[in-house]
Amino acid sequence: QKEVEQDPGPLSVPEGAIVSLNCTYSNSAFQYFMWYRQYSRKGPELLMYTYSSGNKEDGRFTAQVDKSSKYISLFIRDSQPSDSATYLCAMSAVLTGGGNKLTFGTGTQLKVEL
Amino acid sequence: DTAVSQTPKYLVTQMGNDKSIKCEQNLGHDTMYWYKQDSKKFLKIMFSYNNKELIINETVPNRFSPKSPDKAHLNLHINSLELGDSAVYFCASSPFSGNTIYFGEGSWLTVV
Image 1 (cartoon, rainbow over the protein chains, first blue to last red):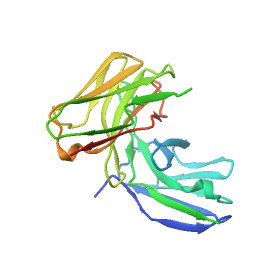
Image 2: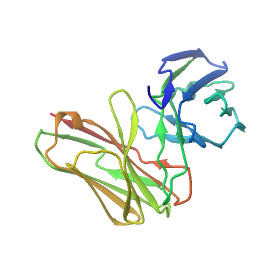
Image 3: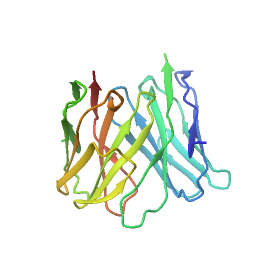
């Protein structure tokens, strides 16, 4: 079993829809949770960063973390064609000695259609 | 101004060759990384350096040797390339005590 599970999609939605992307994980040591967006032929771009359980909102994006269920979500409101990309969840535990080892999900490919 | 830049972006080479990928960051971060993304888009850490010192080495074959001449640069040298090395290699950086990692644009390596 992988440490982080993510539905690969593809997920196709009409413009303006609310999108829900999810990941589950098995390692209870994970404390930091991130969502990255990756456009085709580009590097992952950090979208949202949360620590521990709770919600965080940034514009049209909301990240949710439920540590008791080992489940994280990213919601995109009023989705736009420019949101079409692969969304990767990532998480990490605290590393001694500094640095950070991110464990990624496999990514969900999202297409927002006109 | 590119924060994390890596060269070359595309590299096609024959099996058995040796090649290098260079990375530079201008964010003032102390920690740099190499990640590998396979054909299924799975992204996995290979190495992490903090201020020129190796912190993380994730069961990567000895043919892969990272080198950090200073904290703004982390290069990846690969010896005796194999078909299975074909992937996208991402350089990244983060503050020493930070938990947010910033990625470069990637280097697409194809071994034929």
